Image 1 (tube, rainbow, N blue to C red):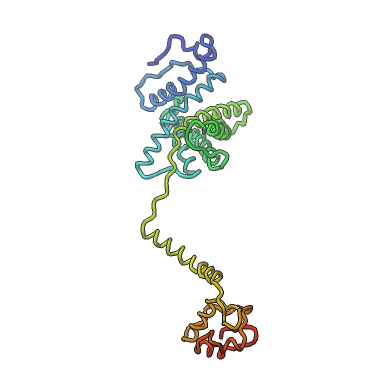
Image 2 (image 1 turned 180 degrees about the horizontal axis):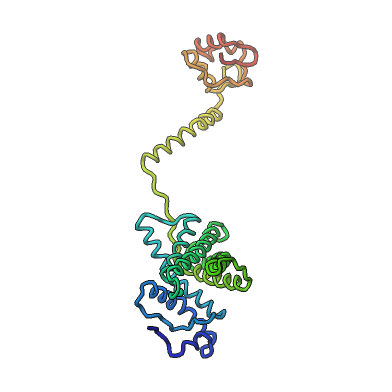
Length: 329
């Protein structure tokens, strides 16, 4: 059984409806008729639909319509693949993840939604359609994901992102169209054809398909996953590490900024409070932590005055003194 219009040939050839007949007929073919016939073949016992005559090769306008219409079943298939992947804990991430998701979606379309010759080697033809679609859409996804990772084609969501998304996807459609043509040639002829006319058509078809898909994706971009929040323990460890890293720098800065204090009432030369403190600590049995800089001089008179405690004076005499500076032991 076949579902038909009274004059399907007029829509296909444009003899009655012209440009709009080809465009609308192609969109109907890509969005509804072809997917339905693919399902009808796979399930069996369902009538074939022949609303639009596709017995002959489509012209440029009709082929553009088919490419535009095919976006609808692809979006539905990709959504189903994502849902199925989510139920088993799989999620496409990164360039390879996005390409794999597109390839799996294409393979599903090839098996379920692509009509093939059902009179000879039906399941073999279905497998070939799945393979061709998988290679084509993997290439499209790989190129598109790679371009999306660059600053020139990175986009958000909304009207302003549409031109960038369309341009990015149209570029991605070029290698995808080439792969589709050559994969079909290998599948049907067991060889690569490299026919420039067929390659040009394939590239243009998939540039149109991907460009329209990019416009759709501008308003349905997946949300960027947020990194999980840190636990209290992780925050405490991070703060401890940062504090340990900053303590030496902080102490050095404090030492540098300490106000110089007079060494004695007899002379106005200065010795830092840190150096005086270290001398005092050493006298009590500690270790000298900061060496007295050479430019800070102490005379023999100063070393014996009340500027230092007896213990500090004894320390100075014990550690060695000359007319220029005091050094640690």
